Amino acid sequence: MKKVTIDLVLSELHRLYPDAGCTLRWRTPLELLVATILSAQCTDALVNRVIPGLFRKYHRPEDYLSVPVRVLERDIRSCGTFRVKARSIRESCRMVHGRFGGRVPRTMEELLLLRGVGRKTAAVVLSTAFGIHEGIAVDTHVHRVSRRLQLTRKNTQNAIETDLMRKTSREDWGHISHLLIALGRDVCVARKPRCPECVFKFVCPSSTVSSKQ
Image (cartoon, rainbow, N blue to C red; front, side, top):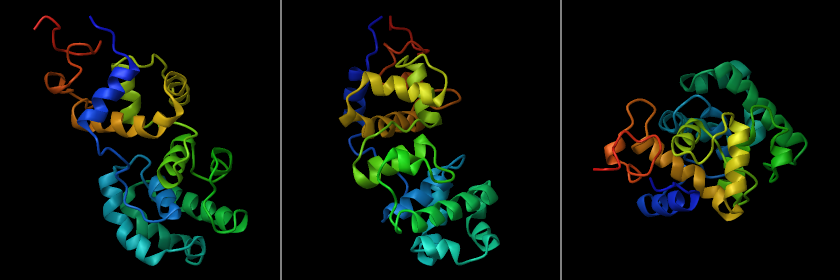
């Protein structure tokens, strides 16, 4: 069986999904930060239904701090774990306003100081809003697809990110997540992956399609 390489995967996925990118709707770095916090354990499609009304109401970090937390909880309730997310948004906005002069920080180290922001969220914000590549966002799709293709044998989010970063150039870090997510949503789904439809069906170690066909 031909070996799957990261270069092969990136080449094929760039061809298949030339417009792959962040599917969250945003206009400012603050909006992207909030949307990404909301997307934890929630689909981008659902977040995108909530944020138009949210962003019409809240424009600056101070706006999220000017209302009682229960009001913000009500505004984001349908995104799930809304109490935790409301606290994360408010505390992040408090730090953005007080420590960073109202501007979303532009380094991984500073973003990780914000409540509710892990490496995945920070990598998305840096890459998408600022074109700065300091990491690879590893969500459930990236975790699943990269392991099925055996681009990594690691199990944890941080270990997978480190492994993928080691095997790719920095200029690819901002694209690889979007490409793997596109394949994961389209074909390599969690249950009953559609292997016969996959471009990697004859080389993927996890494929249900025989390479002899």
